[in-house]
Length: 562
Image 1 (cartoon, rainbow, N blue to C red):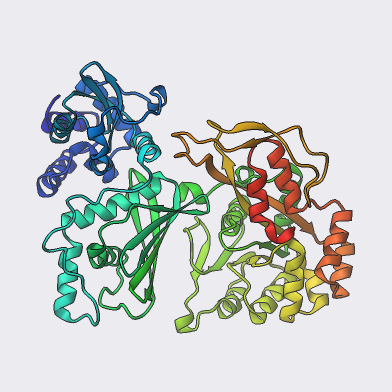
Image 2: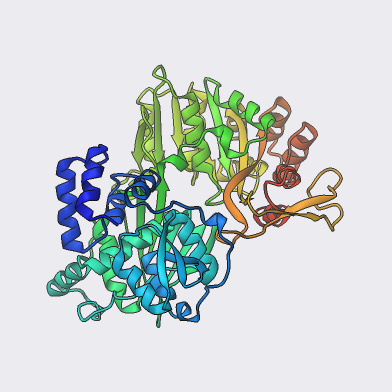
């Protein structure tokens, strides 16, 4: 099957790694007893997509797609006791041919684990190359989510530090966090979260367990937890990565770090908070390729997108984006800034937190502990002669007042609010104390949005629509709609990714007149509807008709509208 040095030489010959990097990788192999193929991918030297064809050619082992193999239970009862082993080694049996077991793996050079599988099954194992994503999805479809906890416990990990942390215990925590099994476990947790398209990892200590959950397409999914006795080591490892104080467990802490996972640049935003049974940690995974989406790809209906473009192209005024936490408001605002950013304009943002660095944009991080609030920061921004200002969120009257004044004095202002719909944003600002005539003169429009899960195109099912007219949905119901199925591509959920649904309230002269009259949200909404505004559910219903999402999803994210 070839040796590591021979494969390394080929990687050097192809220019995938340099000679110096080859030496560094060899040293890491020896220190960590790690596989070359997994190491070069994890370190970001080469993507799996580029490595696997080279590996297939080098070893003479076929590169296959698991879609070509039916999803069947494992062929041998002995393998049912080896679930953790399969998860850890990222191997999955796909077919039995006589006395031969075909096994999909990302690393056919892992002879020790292949041999162990032969002993467990009494079959001759023949490896096939497959993508890790497909293997993980197949394992999860067969056994459920999770990651291995085998061989991670040991004498050094058994001690759990509780109570006050002294200097000796801090050093012990550092030692635990630096052990190879702990490093691998945390790396595995991050890589599998990324593979699962998770936006967040929740690590939560309870009395008798350490719970781990991934938020995938807006929904939390529990995965197999690591041993509870590794709680202190795992959390310390994460805090060290984020340069947080591992000795401080009484107060919340926040940090961030840039890492490369499977060749992808990922920002990790880490937040800890003390709980009854120890520190709870949430890791936000921010992949640059996902946040910098064009507005066209976010799901805007053409008519709404055209009107939104007209708003953000104005020289001054205020454009608001509203919706609950996690509804994609920041992504929309970043997309808007990308659309109108050019060297002739000065753009300044104040955010909490700064999600990503935007080229050519001056970005400010809110720091309330030193007095840098949205209001104080915005007051200073106005004196920097900007053309465009983005305020991460309007939370109080002072920020709202300054934002409105900025919009009236020749600046284009973007900001967000937390309200149920577009009309509710106007009412919220009036309730904060913003003068009606100032708001009516400054606001250009309000965009409300939600995120719904996309149906997996590989397994969605067309079914007869059983209902009649649905509240908030216009038009006659279709004869058929689509429902989720479940396949390897979507890890059995039936959904793959998310898309936005939108409503846009333009500040027409008639709407502005109602604002000055301090009309309530219902009056503003009703007038906007008569002027052609499509409600959130209306856009959602259209996406249901098109087979993009389900009726249940639209109702779930717009339940307050019903």
